[in-house]
Structures are given as structure tokens and as C-alpha cells.
Image: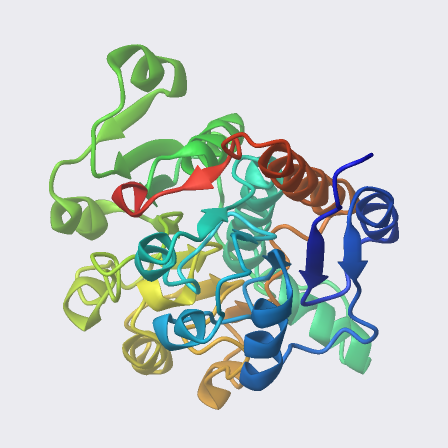
Length: 328
């Protein structure tokens, strides 16, 4: 007699091919619309499922996990970042947490380079003029931006994505610098032609472009605070494809408005969907709706990783992408 299939709840709509495969393997409760679940809905879902598959839009705190009851055994996150999940409390309650690392590396790195190009070359301003019908023709001094080649790029966080950004930036002729919790092996540094800075402050003050590629943890919250932002050169720009909480968004907005920083490209924001309205008014700022991992290939691969984690758990083994508090 075959073993009973796990009960799995999806909190958002996933790519159709992922949902179909999950339905073949598990007893799946699909989300009919694509709106985030309320807190009450999440608590109810955790109480009735063996596995819940949340996304970054679902904040799962200790109080909610305390109401989950005894059935929930795995939180199989659809995404790499798990700062929206209280992993420590989950572990204390015997609930495993898995994620999907490595899938969106190239997609996010592509977006970081796209933002660098867009800000330095003033692409949104040119697009706005064309769409509004305000272009009077070519002029020697119109829409002058900055050349990408030769710029010094400071990468904050040199994990998979940071290294992928470094490879792309090098191909564009940028000089790569980085700050990281741990220095890379010398062979990797040599291959990337990357210069390591033990002092984040010293690196920031010398760079033309800062790319934020570190995760959001208690130690990285407002890592780019007002004091550090003031270290940036007035002609420097900053891009963020990681987590909005790493940058003090209010301080960044004030400095952009005052001309103390030349520009910014942001795919993530400190308060999620609540984007500072003053940022929207600035012509030297490129704002994107968290599109870093938004490729068909990437989102399907994320789903495949979720399936592997759940299937491995169902077979009585440790999920390959298990997250433990010591990793954070």
C-alpha cells in the first residue's frame, strides 16, 4: 500500500509547470488568486499542512509558528532569502526550513549590471523624453551620462551573486573591488581580478559605483546608513538588487535630492511595496518592482528546487537546501 502523500499548501501562484508537477507528487492546495495571504490565512494554512511553500511576501514569525500545531514539519521557501521566516523558532519547534539557493545568481547579476548601465547612461530620462514626445533631436550636451569602462565598482557581499556581478563588470571594463565577511581565496580573487577591502568605509569612499549584494541579516540592517552614504563621492551611484533593508532609504533619498549622490538603481526597498514617494520624483533614480529573479527559467528552477526539497523530506531524508540558524 503506497504511503500517504504529504499535504502541501502554496501561498502564491507559481509557474503552471511547477504547480502541475507538485500536484502529481503531493496533495497540493493551490492559491486561486495571486494575492499575498493574510496573517490569519497563513496561520490556518500552517495548521492544516505538512508542508507550506511561502514566498518573500509571507512574513512567518515566532508567534505564527507557535500557532501552527504539531502537523507542520517543513517550510519549503520559494526563494533564497529567508529573512522573512523565524528560522530559529522553527527549528526549536522541530520544523525544518529549506530554500532555493544558487538558482537566481545569473538573473540577479544581469539585473545589477542593467541598473548600473541605466543609471550611468541615464536611460530612463531618455526613455521618458521619447515617450512624452519631448525629443528635439540630437544635441552635443543632451543626456550626457558616464562611461562604464574604467569605473571602480565596489561590491558589498561577494557570494555567488557578487562574484557573478564581478565577472560581468570586468567584461565591461570596470575595476572590481569588494568587501565581504570573509576574504575570497586568492585563486578566486585572481580570476575575478578583484581587490579586497577589509574596511568597508575605505572602499566606499573610493568607488564610482556601489553594488549591494549581501543578504539581510541583523548585522547588515542599514549597513549602508547615513554615515556610510556620506562617504560616497558626489559623482558616485549605488545599486541594490539584494534586500532593501541594507540601505537606510530615507537617508539615501535625502542625499539624492541634495545632489550628494549622483544616482541610484533600486530593485528592492526597505519597506517592501511601500516605496518612498520622494524617490519616485527623482530623474536620477531607477526603480524596479523586485524583478531581479524574474525570468521564466529562473522561476521554474526555483520551483524545481522546492519540489526536490519536499520530495527528499517525504522520502525520510534531509532536504538538500536545509537552512539552519548558524548559516544566517
